[in-house]
Image 1: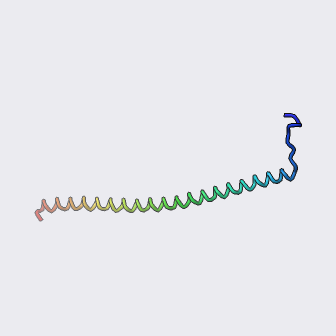
Image 2: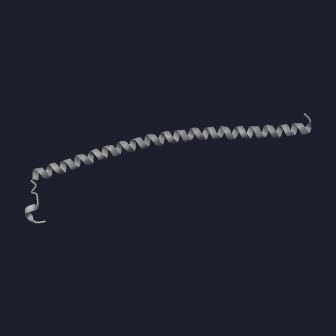
Image 3: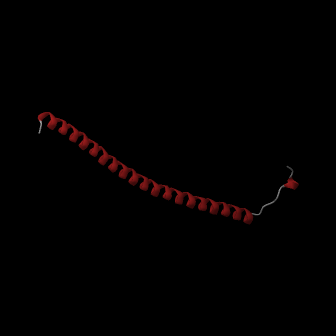
Length: 82
């Protein structure tokens, strides 16, 4: 590229371009920060839902244990003819 084809930029124009670049970067950072906050909220909700599932599974396991014990006691009662 020769000298004639190069566009000359003044210091003011360069300062404006740099300022726009900083503003764009600042906006992108705000968007990223917002996205991260949304992810954090989603993570908290997910953890709460997981805890809820664990509690339900604990109750299910307990129910199976009770049913098993009932079956075993019934078998013992039948053998003892109670």
